[in-house]
Image (cartoon, rainbow, N blue to C red; front, side):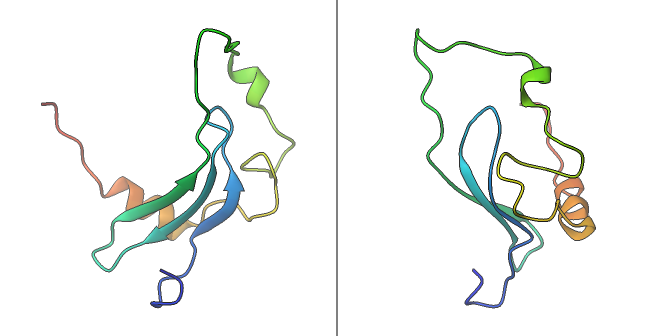
Length: 86
């Protein structure tokens, strides 16, 4: 995506509960695309946690904290996607 002229809008980073790596882009049609890998596999040994477990220091938007938080352009693109009940 980056080589095709679509810059990374958020990432690289690592999400919390899914523990997955991510990069977010906005495609030519204005739709948000997430490239992701290493999503946590959940089985009977998984110990669940509440929201407090995933609280990071101020200003950090993912586990690593190396990327800037999502930009306004990404948030706006996300809001344009409407979901309808099936």
